[in-house]
Length: 330
Image 1 (tube, helix red, strand yellow):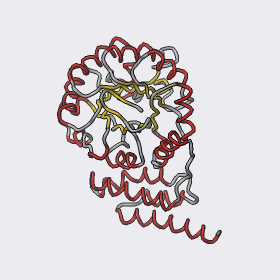
Image 2 (cartoon, rainbow, N blue to C red):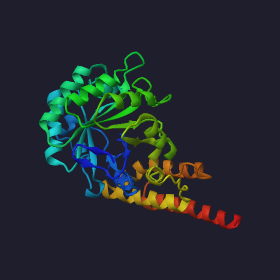
Image 3 (cartoon, rainbow, N blue to C red):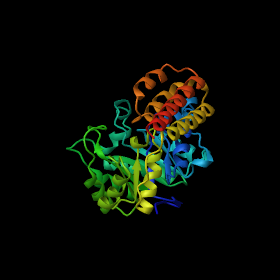
């Protein structure tokens, strides 16, 4: 099983930290589908240090989500350490993760995220400072490099291990690739062979079969699933089952999808408020609807929804239409 420091997971399947997505409502839903570890969306170190209200709200963790990894990002040692101390002492997170992979310019311009990938010495210095300041295990999520000419994944991973980091999640793309092109699993294998701490592979895991293949081909200790879990927590459950039993379970029915979508919505309402939750849920609902016949018309209507009642009514109608169609076919 996957073990990070003194934190033991029940399986090797990890939910990736996705900005604007991985709040408590989403994480708890995915956790209930069997994820061994869920990761919170990245939080600004300065936002924590200056007690920004929006940032502080991102630190909320439901006990049922645990074990959980909370990710911070920043470019300056002093504020990163201060933020890590706050997370260590004032949240119920189990693991503190440092973001070294975010490719977006507004993050890299602040010498944060993927910008670290260019300097193994900075990685050692920053991770070491955080490790010595906190009690919780410290991990790093990184990409394989900045661009094709600057792939320092092995050196960077070794710097993390030397600094006392307890695990590495490695996305097999460069910063320049963003989310395009193909993830390089060979580099995940190289990194795994170069360090003794756990390595979690990330990138192009779209099916349970992909997850098993990544584990077998790279020797990594865990597999991180991101975009494939959007609107599809069954991907997590099916992957866990496939890895444990070698049995590939079927896809959920439309009714099952709509029921979980409504549960997700209600958790989001409880976390925020109805107005904000319904607006945020529009993108999630579109993900839940992916692959369902006739979803385009419903998606357009969902984007006009202002209330829970309107959104739930549309989801229920879709499920009813599907069941009636199946009854006719039967």
